[in-house]
Amino acid sequence: MTEASFKPEGYLRFDLSQGLVSTPDKRRHFIVPAEIINAAGTYASLEEAARKWGQEQGAALVTLAGKDVLDRAPEQFIAELAHLMATLGWGWCELESWGGVLFVVVHQGPRGAGNKILSAFLGGVFSAAAGQRFECVGIDDGTARRFLLTGPEHASRIQGWVDAGAACGEVVSRMHAGDHLGAAQATTGGA
Image 1 (cartoon, rainbow, N blue to C red):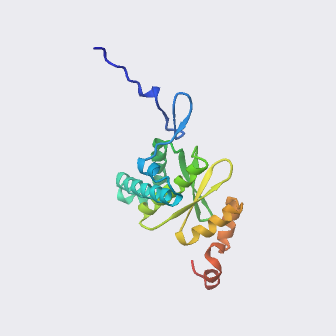
Image 2 (spheres, rainbow, N blue to C red):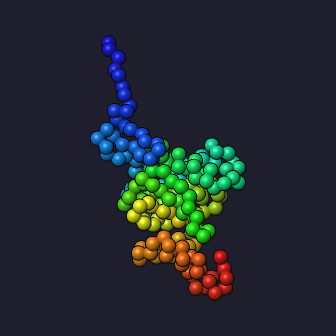
Image 3 (tube, helix red, strand yellow):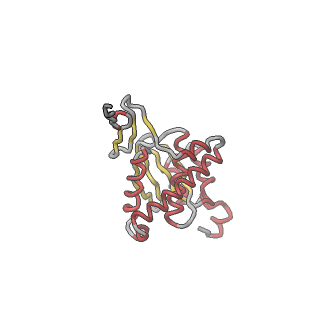
């Protein structure tokens, strides 16, 4: 009996520096848990499954990087997250702060419906890691996809601005002006 010579690089190629997984014919692939695919019936269930997946991965990242990872520079946690995303073929990420407004910038990430999965996934990762609920609002500026980290009480208002065509700079300006707080909170000085 002859021994089969299996060569995994003939099936999938991993470019971890770019966070890409592809087949030899250059088709892009994303590694996604079966639960995410099974939940694809409705957006609400898909979002819930992606968020749960993110929470699991966020908890795993904290365990792997050490419980004190959140006490260290945020860039260390983001580096761990970038490695995870690259391994899954979801691109790579970095952290940006625009006057205190935090964005996770995803390069080589999915477009279209994949962004909804990624947005929920990132919200889950940061929620699990920080021990409080975060939402991510995706903003496409043409060169990269930015995910604004915000509290759940502000996410729908900010998403509305983005849906109406607001770019990152406008969103940040409006947040600095307190527009995301709503009329009642802005006049009472709530945060």
